[in-house]
Length: 128
Length: 416
Image (cartoon, rainbow over all chains, first blue to last red; front, side, top):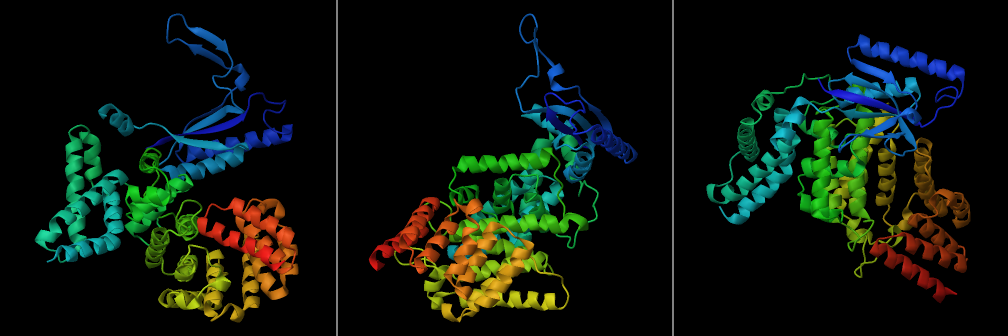
């Protein structure tokens, strides 16, 4: 079955309540997201889900030539950074988009849905 | 058989059978690329063979059989490399049939897949014209004034996304079908509008696009005969298309509704459009629910095409219909069009007050400035009218409209 990554973006630095306007809002979003995760598990879509520490904690490593070069910070300068994601299994994009809409509502964020490569698409790549 | 007869049969088969052939192959092989290429090869084979062998008794069957054979040949060639994958694809319908919408027809699946909201709007248009309409990539590129390889890339990318993201080949579930259908109708209407008043380029009207949009709407009507908005969109486009012969002067200038030679309107298209509008009025009277935007726009156009002269137009009816439209779509453009009708009913001063309230969102919109210019002209405010014509001319890319607006502006000088 196809797998999709559902990514949620947010600011590089979070306020004292994560990305939320108040502690109550944060707790409510956590509760709703937890309930959504349980639904994903119950209905057989769930593969993995977690939130990331804020983007300012990221470190970039380039080991392509000689000694690895280590630098502070996210790889790309951007207004918003990946804040967390789900990996789901769904029969097609319509199902994935419906789940993403629920996840977006639960976590109070915009969700990007992107398919993983499949054995078939990887094979096509090798055959070219 | 003459070459001419065979050619005519091929053109007819292309109009009648292309969509069905592509849609059937896409369903069977689960791959739009394979379907498109095999269908194109089958039509190429017809071009080669029908003039000498004769047109087959069942052209659609011949094309389907030939295209299926071409598709299987291609998959066999490829299956040496990807045996397992292709073997799976050869099995009829690899996906479990889902609960589907009102009609089970491969062509409808194809339409919904090409107009999927996960595709960019310009990709939806291009895919629909190529896979549903059967236009060549070169034709689509020409119609939208882009390089052929740009258009080819747009279509290839869209097909690649459909495959990689697993956009399903099916009619949406009953719960989603109305919303998704609205997206399909928007694609068809966009094709029509681009042909009806081309945004740019040397041709003010691109008949190949308006005709194609009408053809697509007829197909949707055949597939979804009970849908009010499908009927409404088809009626709207027929009643608009009917006026095309009167919309350009000999010198290539746009002719507005009040100056059009109504004798040049296409009565057959008007008759067909009016019948659809009557059908929807009867359905609404019988409790079919409130009409959507296309049905209301069709009704407005039916009032216009009913009037033997501009003076006979039932403007109160038109304003009442625009009131209905504003109730479901209070966008500035709808309110602008309502104000144009208000000018005829309540005079230019009332209309201008309405129009000026829309200045914020519509300042750069050519029709807004053109409407203001016209109303100011009627009120004798020549200097302001001239300035508005200048803004309108600067905002339009359509040569026929520019010519018309320029002449109207220059007439101001003569009058004062």
